[in-house]
Length: 378
Ligand code: PMP
Ligand code: GLN
Image (tube, protein in one colour):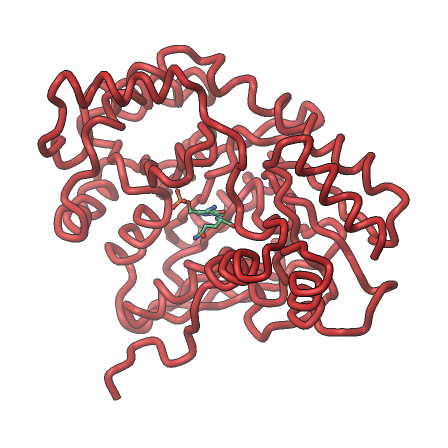
């Protein structure tokens, strides 16, 4: 048998986007904006290319970019990550997550994840001989019971992966959640991957409690970020990882061989663009307005709305509309109603189906109106 991942099939994002294209359906499945990123940022990339930044960047990333990432983290969370030793620029969050897992997971190690979970965690853990220990979170609030987490910890537990704001549910961790997590990881000598790709997409004046804010936690965490989410250019595949020096040393040992460094002109451009904090500080307001436009438009539909406090996703419960599985339901809607969304059972370990689908509202108001017209008729 040559496969190392016998149970892995093609990612739902690839499947649904392909189906949306095939059936000419409105694509609210895979998470990406259908509006443009700031022309200034595009201009800065063009300038960097014309100025000759077209050869390899330093292995951990452009120093200017690492410096502004450090300043941004200090501004937001009052924590200094040293640009030389504690920051690495990555090819998106996916590569950062994979690299962190590759750096620390040995055969037999257990890693706790919370389901529904983003789809790259479990296969990456298993690829390195680790065992995924899932903890199922439930609608409508998707809150963690930290006692349950404590019960799942064994002498083999090495890692906990968290993701706040949470894809797909839109739930967030409170300060109390982070303190509970910190207590557990210190007590049990664990490591954390904190997937914070939606750090700037948080609503209702809530605060994003980054792992960076909690000293003992940040010491044991790889914090993962994605510029694609923040600056509306998911196709650039740019992100970064923050970690204390001893963890970052291990991260870089792998990073240098799975990518070495990521593309130079984008790094130069982002270094310049990040000098203006308004470029990311306005994001909660921007996306909250989109969420609210969308929810207002579908308020009379037959879908039950599950509150989204962050991310650019909205979960909808269709249990009063159909008894089909969420996969059948989304396939039928793509083919017949011409709207593509994500069935969320695929994010659960045993594909538990709670009749909930995920909609991406990172779309123009025009697209949201079109989507609402279709959804209101279902
Ligand atoms: N983590 C989560 C929770 C995500 O939703 C995504 C993608 N949207 C990623 C990681 C991967 O981000 P990137 O596109 O930067 O690789
Ligand atoms: N993160 C995006 C989502 O949740 C998809 C990224 C991808 O296609 N791999 O939809």
